[in-house]
Image 1 (cartoon, helix red, strand yellow):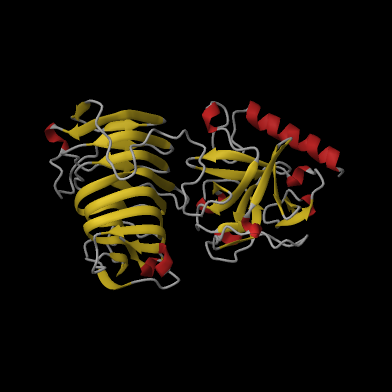
Image 2 (tube, rainbow, N blue to C red):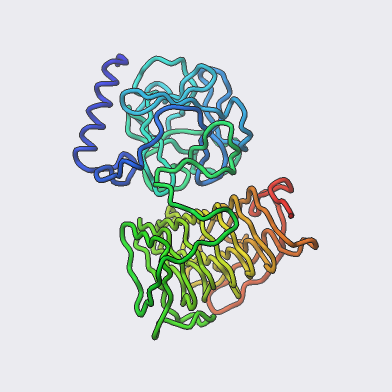
Length: 422
């Protein structure tokens, strides 16, 4: 098929999908706010949302792309240029394209001589706080082989869904991979670094507020009242907010008592949510899909007797640009829930201030992973805060056994350069 015919075919596919209100990558195209427009030009690194690793080319035509540790090098710098059907991704004078202009799942994505073919055009579609990178020729998503999160994993195209390895964040070139990524969501107004927002009014909550779509609180303080709960460690308390699959909660302060905070029933995003006095838990990730994601971007929490973020369902939790102080555990993958799942967490741009005990607790026997980057720990001269604590998950009714701690290259993923003590 000629490049011209491929472009015409891609344009037809894209037009039909948009007209039908169907996302190129499983989300909604119609109704997407203009503020969510993807970048169309400039230099970026592409960071895989499932692994925290960067899209990497070798500089050789015909070489399949891989993901590897982010280093801001030339092989990880991608120049976006607007074309029909989306953008091209150029590295070293070559373009990222699908091998043989295939529309089949599992086909390699490689570096090729730039030809203008639609198999070298990519649409960036919003997916929570990330993007899916969708090939214009076959409407399939850039992904890692077998959804791998390992360094060196091959990059290919696959059918689009909500798997984390099919989502990417874009960092402007020159920034480190731990800088806040360019996201498709509007940037909320945030207080200066290290400070807490001033409440813009307050509201007593006597029954759980159910959120579908987006709730922007404009920094109103919400606090539990009546039978909602007293903010202690009683596990029977109701949440102040319950987020449906796909919901976004932003610019909210949870005051005291906070009951059981926020429940996320599937993929959800929390932007600039602040807990002045964590109740039972700040937020709990529930749901049942292994591809679901919970993104906590911005905000902070303090006065957490036990856990801040509790991960009960499967999937991946992302905690970034977040501050925590006076806490037990920042993150805990449930070790004795009714259902046992593999759970993953990615922590980046975290500031933790003592007193505190643990940043993340995971169950290695279920294959959990915790990845850390750009972690700052304050007032801990004795380095007593545990970065990554390992447990052996057990059936409901038993207590998980603590079996170790520290980086191991398999479950607890970080190096000494990822942790800074101040």
